[in-house]
Amino acid sequence: MKAAIIGASSESLHTIEIAHRLGLAVAAFDGNPDAEGLKAADESYVVDISDEKATIEAVRNAGVNFVLTVPIGRYLTTIGAVNESLHLPGITRQIAEFCTDKYAFHTRLQMQKLRNCTCYCLPEELEEELVLSFPAILKPRFGSGSRGIYYLESEKELEDALKAIGDEPYILEECAKGEEYGMDGAVIAGKFYMVLLRKKDNTPLPNRQAVAYYSVNEEDAFYGQVAEYMQAVIDALGLSECLLHADLIRTEAGPFAIEVSARPSGHNLHNLFTPLATGVDMAEEYIRYRMGEDYSFVPSKTDEISIHYFDMEGVVTHIPTQEELMMTGADIVKWNCLLAEGEVLSSVSDGHSIMGRGYFILKHNKKEEPAKQAHKIKELFRVEL
Image (cartoon, rainbow, N blue to C red; front, top):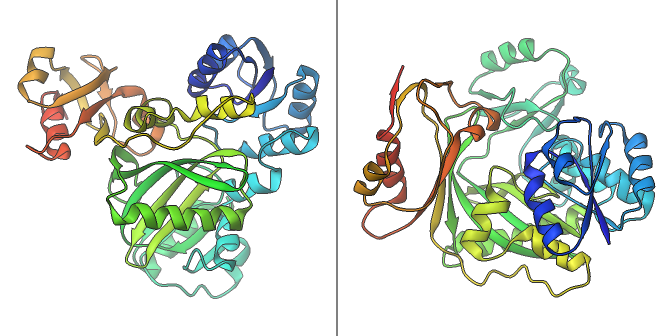
């Protein structure tokens, strides 16, 4: 059997490795001839994945059995178009549109009373009187990570932001209040399997870029609420036969979906943190499912662990030694620091500004909160502003 991977960045390497281990050949497609996934795949095709027709023809000629999703942004729609055109299992283009078009996503869920907030599509609705409560969020309509987000507390701030964004498609919506979470899961034959719920530690608004994630187990009341809510969201969007990740807010009224996408999470989550916390490698189980082998998305455990990224700002003048790390008393499960002395670290504004720095994973203990442990570790670095 042979599978396609559309979008062969470095975040596709884990899935390719698992596929090879299970005896599955991989044909990779990407517009960048230097993409790391192209080098790791059995067959490599340089094709602009924003061009749906060209990608469909390239995948058709490769003769694959199914498409494996990896972390990808806006061009999830190309995967949907490929599946639909070549009659392959997985999401359709319309479902991919719900996952990448924030206004279509909002409209669909609001119709089912699963997302309760005022939301405008700009610039189309600028001619109308904008009636909403502040604070509000102004963000690109199509996938952008944390780029171009405005947190607005007044009409004046809204007026200034509207002048700044120009003609790019944006949405304007009321800001849901509460703590932010992420979720990893899968949908098989319409049934939702939640693999891991994780609480986020974010940078201040407007970016809300995660700098840490904490595993959440079934004992937390929000866990069950998310499981029930996400099944309703999946039914409303028509999601099926896919891996899944979502960003949610824990509001007083229950879960509020920021976004949902039919692909695995990036940032060393689906390939590292989620398997460590739950024992479930989502890529492996999905490949097994597609190959007709035994599979399971049901976690055998949920370990209390957290993953932290290096969100410091300034010039790095000292990186802690192993001895210094041990003296903190923290139980470090994995350490992957990619920083170098003399490196200049900019402020964290989006995923690109932090993910190349590395990470560390902590096992929680009852002596001290993991956030405090992580802070102690980061303080061992000397960074000059």
